[in-house]
Length: 266
Image (cartoon, rainbow, N blue to C red):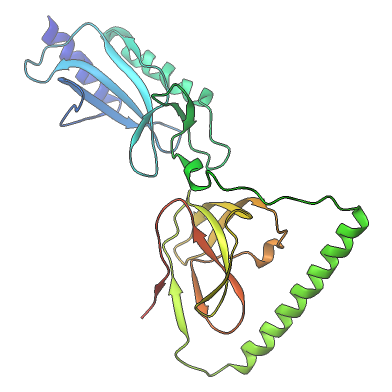
């Protein structure tokens, strides 16, 4: 009878586009999984209860949701629930619906899970990128002073832009300018660096923070900037995963969430 149940469970899961895993690192039963129908990086995982050796099944199958983080590790984000072969399909739908109630990290938008410590934390562990860094103290200014400061920065930025355009036009026809590129991925935690050519002028880690949302095939980078204590206008912030090392001071990305370097393009 248990082998009949095993065939029923296997038929239901394969019919619902589940893939059977070759191994079960934590037990001796067959594991099936597939992508969640709507949530990115979430998989529906079913412990079928089918013994890998005998092919016989227990009376219940366990269903849970896992989030696949940036390190490709699985983090269990829902409590495992169990179902008989008769109620397996409906229980899977119930577990899928539970995804919308799982908390999301406000910084990188990853799903949260309960760690061994009992704390509910980000699946990407994105807090490690800025843990221990102190935020710059902000001084209170009168509204008139803020307006004056912003106006002054805007004029300075405009002068820098005009100067950059002028220098750029003067350098037309020059050859062999060094070009650098860097791997930037969606979900990366980034800050920026001010540079002149290949010389680093200022590292703004702790003052500016962003999360990469999208990178196009042509290298255009869309970023959600979550912190900017130096109030740089958004149009000065970098938008590409490459830059040309010339004599104009400008800004480039610095990835905080993983080790990555700028590489010279041949």
